[in-house]
Length: 464
Image (tube, rainbow, N blue to C red; front, side):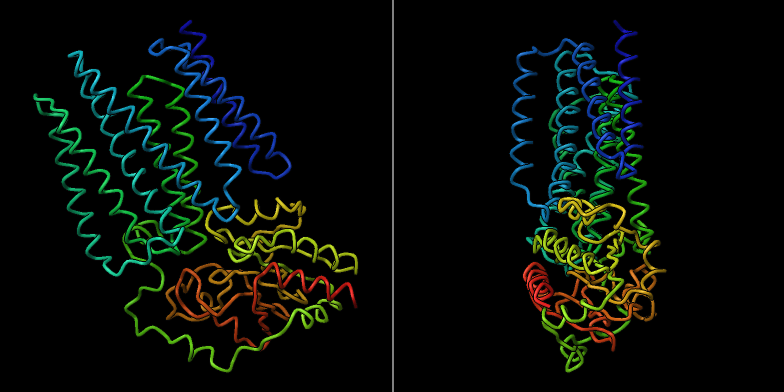
């Protein structure tokens, strides 16, 4: 039985790796998901055969309850809320690690059968990382929802975090070395770790939330791997390690896309919080310089365009305009135009947000081009339509050394022959700074909800 269980965990690991590899390409993504799901089924069955600790009736009841909650969440979660859902799931994973590690330690204490120091270290790692993931994810969700605004006391939070971190380190050392094992000491340590999670995420600005969500995903995997050592479960160790490693790689990719280092994200404060000078007044920046247009004007402009680039952003997701943009693109293609979609790595609120959104409208994946592929083509674009994107198309990142986002890789939309910005208002993006794209000589702005503007433009084109 021991050999069969270990072989099952190995088979599950192979399925996970093949599943991740499959998800790297649109054409194999569905099959990759299916292979990964099969791997998870194998791992769960192996875990049930491995330990006979709890009744199968309880296990089945838990699985049905969890599946029911999952289906309910999937049906009620809008596409705009996917980042919050991902962050919530990270937190749930962290909470599970804390609960399992704490209950395992308490059961061992009651049986007077505490493990070795190495086992205690695994308990601590599971609790610390899991608790930080739990409260950090909660704060991230509230920030993404807008329930928590930008903090004005970043240095105070950093001081609280430093003190809490020192307390966690000291408490962990005492937990391992002390001969007296008190459940209250464990509760106090959990409490400190929960506070540490709040302190680590609270000072981080909204512009950096996508990076934080990716990092918390890595934390949840590492917490799961540590819990695997606690339970002596090879399947959990492998799965947690894969999640942790992929999360860290994703975090590094996103930091590169934002020209930010991870320490700068975690400890440097938010975008737009710079001491380089007074904040520029937006009213003065835009006064009399923005040229406005209507959907009818946009329709006339697109009627003669042969190369059109759509640039989706979070505003597109908020308006649920993915089907409207597909309908407009179809009309343009009937008229002989080439339509592409420019995807920035951090467009929206999480990696792949725009890809999933557009895939929902059955937009061909080969029309979706990442930043490196589309930037050389933008100077040849007749029209670039910016749909709710802001910071990822701000020319200041490439042209203004004094800008807080200077050096951040952007979509070179400003190089297109004509730029149409569809936006509800002139409000700034997460970076909190004005966007010079809106006042460029080759730019026009159509104010309004992206879905309404696109539908009106499509109707106008049909009448031409």
